[in-house]
Image (cartoon, rainbow, N blue to C red; front, top):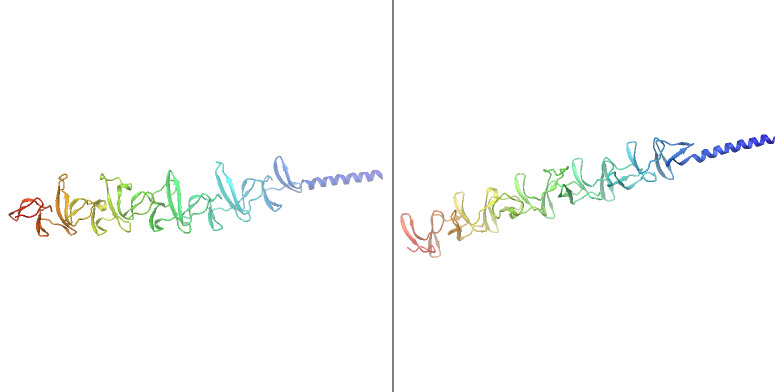
Amino acid sequence: MKKLVSLLLITIMILTCFVSVAFAADGWQQIDGEWQYLENGSPVKDKWIQTSGKWYYLNVDGIMLHDAFVKYADKYYYLTTDGSMLDKGWKLCVDDAGENYWIYANAGGALMQDGWLKDGKTWYWFDKDCVMATGLKKINDVWYAFKDNGTMADNEWFQETQYGFGLWFYANPGGALVRGWKQIKGKWYYFSDNVQIGYWDAPWMYNFGEAEIDGKYYCLDEQSGAMLTGWVDLLKHNYTYSILPELWVYYGEDGARRAGWVKDNGKWYYLANDGTYMYRNCIATIDTVYYAFGDSGAIPEGWFKTKVYLNGDEEKWVYSTVNGIRISSWVKDGNDWYYMDDNGYMVTGEYEIDGKIYTFDQNGKWIK
C-alpha cells in the first residue's frame, strides 16, 4: 500500500513538473540572442501580438523584429529598438549612408506614405518610401518647397542650391510655387521654368539682368530679382554686347523696354535699335526730321552746342526745339538773326543764301 501511495505521489510530482515547465515556457523567451513569443510552448510566427499595451511583430521564423520597417496588409510599420510598434508620432531614422530622415506613424501604427500630413497648423509630405520631404518636390505636377524641418513653405520665400546656384523660389498661399509674374510687397518678380537646373525644372526667380519674356524685354535686378523701371545702364546688369562705356535703356512702368520716343520728367529722348541705343550729344534724322540730343540724351531747347558727325571733337551750334532743329533756316533770337546751314549748324563768316552773300560774326549774328 505504501509503495502504491509513493508511486502515485511520484507520478503527480512528475506531471506537475511537466505542467510547470509548459506554463513557464509561454510568453517572451530569449533564445540564441533573439526574442520569441511562445504560446503553448510553440513560437508565434508571422503575426502581430499585443502585450502590456504594445504591439510587436514576429516574422516567419518567429523572431521579434526591431529597428526595422515591416510591410503588412499593404501598409508599412516601424518597430522601435525594443521591438514595439511606433504608434502615432515622429521618429528620426538614419539611412545606410548615415543621413537622417523623419517618418511619421498614424494612430494604429501605419506610416504616412505618398501623401500629406497636417500636424497642428503645418503641412508635411511623405514619399512612397514613407520619408518626410525636404527641399523641392513635384507633387501631382505641382512644385512645392519644404524646409529642412519638413514644414511646407507657405506664402514665403525659399532658397535652394543646386550645382552651385543659390536660386530663389516663392510659395503661394497653399504652398504651390509661383510661376510667371508675381507682385510681392509692391515689387514685381518673374519666376521662370524654361531653364532646367539639375534634375528639376521648378519655377525659379529670374535675376540675371535683361530677359525676353512673352516677346518683350525686361530687366530683373541681379541682387534682389525685382523688376527695374526707368533708366537702366545695361552694362551694369550682365549685358556684354556693347563696346560703349555706358548703355542706357528705358523701361516703362510695366517694366517693358521702350523704343523710339520716351518722355521722362518733361524731357524727350530717343531710343534706337529696339531701345538699346540712346541718342546722345549728336544730331540724328528721325522720320525725315533733324533733332539735336544733349549729353544726357535729352532734347535741349534753344541754342545747343554739339559735336560735328565724323569730324573728331569739332563742335558747332544748333538751334533746337522739341519739334526738331532748324535746317536751312533763319532763326531770330531777341533782336538778332542767325542762319542754320543744310545740316542744321549755325553759320559764321560769309555764307551764300539763295544766291546772295551774307556776313555773320564769330557768334553767328548776322551783320550784313
